[in-house]
Length: 449
Image (cartoon, rainbow, N blue to C red; front, side):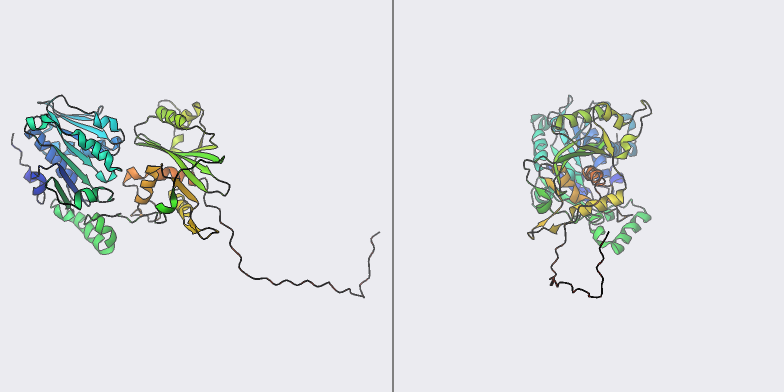
């Protein structure tokens, strides 16, 4: 079999193609062909090394089908190798027909499923982590890193390698570990739209216009510099003010709000004190839960009386096969949902009001909304939200993974549009004098009968 990969990958990826060190890290803006070329590399080398196997990983498992799986399938089609590979959805898996080699898919939202993985043919030697900036903790990566080792890899003449591809939307731990140091086992590259000779003239003009009219966005989207491509939406958010250590809550009224989908069940518990301050004190953040499992998980986590459960309006859409909605299923299990307002723009503007920092009576900066530090995903996602390019009053829907927790927050805030205002201080000085009114001698005294 003869495959001319160079005609498919183009220029500027020679280092990436030949590097055999342990860590190959590739960041870049949109249109940089980073994911496309990575998929072609894996298909080409799996056929070249019949004992090699690949593991594809993302932060959440349910995002893999529309990312890595699709990119690998496109690579097979471009290389006209359809007869060599078998694609299955359940389980999500790709198999090399002649050799039994596997391309497996896992999410960091199920760490046990990653660390216990194995293959029956050859060795699991390569890992592709797509949108690696979404990995919250370096320790999660380390656990996976420790799993790729063993004599089988060298016995078959293979080399262990992690490939991380990402948009540069969050530095986190990745920049310091891979881009700020020099190591023979690390190849850290940045590629951009002008490294992609396959772009159309319209695509190229789009980037040139962005460079001219929106230079801040262009630095991230066009040049691949670290940052937020659309600008941070919630500039009000400050960790030092909005994130607090957990404490034992008094007998305050409690609420639950959530955003639900198979890709993520983002659920939050909120307490409201006597001065209408909000405390987000507990979270459930899990993917892959069908409705019954989400209800079970919620009931297992709820050990206090809840005044109201708030959910998005689509929970009331009736299913064709059963005639019941998700809200009906919750009600069957003793949980009555309250339908939230889904006005996105007004909802986000209301959230801004609650996040607004002000000085209290003691001149200390504070906010009406506080988040316990154990609500790690809400804390992580709020500062990553960006302005929508088409509507600057709205939040961008991409990256989608970071929208679930803030959407749940928005649904709750929709039931409390604005925080209560503090009474304004009156610093004016008033001088009062009281004089006894003089009796008018001409006025007759009227005695009621």
